[in-house]
Length: 228
Image (cartoon, rainbow, N blue to C red):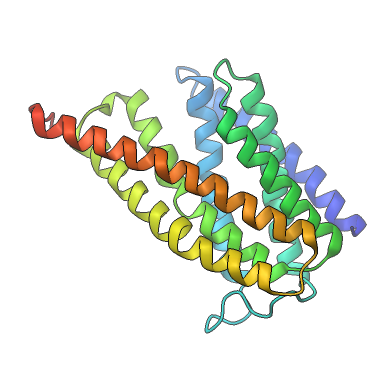
């Protein structure tokens, strides 16, 4: 792994921690989780923008396959690796440890870290970043709305459905295709394994999201709604 990438990751961790501390200071009346979700939302938006900018050919976003990563792709991945390290530690410090989320972060750190170490698979990694983060702002918004007093409102339900729709499109349509091309190309075995692992985690979350949406829609049909 190039020295400048190590510096980017280390600096990124410090900057994400600083971002959290600033947000925590500004929103002193909000919970630890709320502030962390704000940082996560910032990362998700930044990751999608950087991933989009690093695509070399929009007629084939995952091309060239199994190729040497460009410097911009490496930096994009380093930003997200630094965030994942920050968030894994931050989540461990919270009172409510989410095992699913921790497993997801570890899989992503290993996978993206391997890509940075090999300096290959930049196109596949960037595509994975785009797919996994495009639904994240809505994931965090639905939880933050609850703390802001919009639990069980039409607004909260709309964000839930929007999140479920984007997650399904990205993870259950784009995800399997990306896993297939990653495993079919001449990529290192660990990259292929991480692609399969990430898709399995996505499938598990998809199952939980379907149950959540069915429960909320079913409950909404049986009870009067609150209008936000």
